Amino acid sequence: MNRLAIAPLTLHCGGRPVARYEIRAEAGDLDRRQSPRPYLHPVTTLGGTPVTEFAPVDHQHHLGVGVAVPDVDGHNFWGGRTYVRDQGPTELDNHGEQRHREFKLCDPDGFVEDLEWTAESGAAGAAGAVGVLLRERRTVAVTQLADDAWALDFTFALTNPGHETVTIGSPATNGRPGAAYGGFFWRAPKEDAAPSVFTAAAEGEDAVHGRPADWLALAGGGWTLVFAGATAETRRDPWFVRTGEYPGVGSSLASLNRLAIAPGDTAVRRLVTVVADGTLDRARASSLVRKAVSA
Image 1 (cartoon, rainbow, N blue to C red):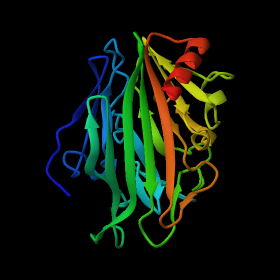
Image 2: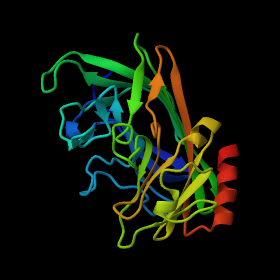
Image 3: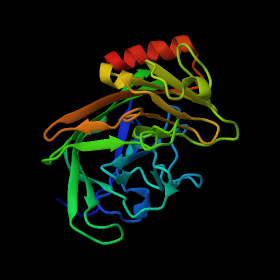
Image 4: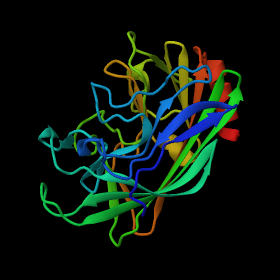
């Protein structure tokens, strides 16, 4: 594997730059407690409005758009503290790293990438051999939907390369109700006013958080993001939503139960996000999602 620094990729849509993909082969200038990983930031609308945030003061381990999981066989690939049952959020030396292996395809409007999810073995605080818990194939593509909207199509496939079952958990499965974060996650910019959030049938953080929905929209100052599961399995995952504390949306891999991946098996999720200028109503959000998923 090439351990040298790799220049970030810039993704284009309609001839305009809309996202930068940063690859971290080493922990580099990211604190290991942030669980170093590749991420998309900045992501912008076609009009140039930023719709991601990187390492904000409130949660420095929120890194734009990517895949982050707080518990893979006890290793933290989310960053920050680990939720320990009957103990609460705890600082542990258990942070893993997503390491870029190679690009299988790399174009101005997307890429296919192979990664390894690695963690040190041995007792907490003691250095040990680096082990590969998961191998990932990540496919990202951008598509223009309209003059004011484009779509980010993000698929990740997690394969267990070992001889024992690997399980994915969340604070919710470890005893913290309502905190089933872990999987695809998008940290949006924090503005003076909290963004609005709605689905086809509900509105507000309390009404949409922790529930599955075909699509979910987050609307801030001059921008709207519409998230949609593009496969039946992805649509069954509940949405993790925050608007009051901070603006962020994710899809929960482990809501009520841990997700088990047997040796040689693969768990696949595909999410499509509409990135639009302005504030969308339900009708237009739904229309753009249909177009994005079928593109």
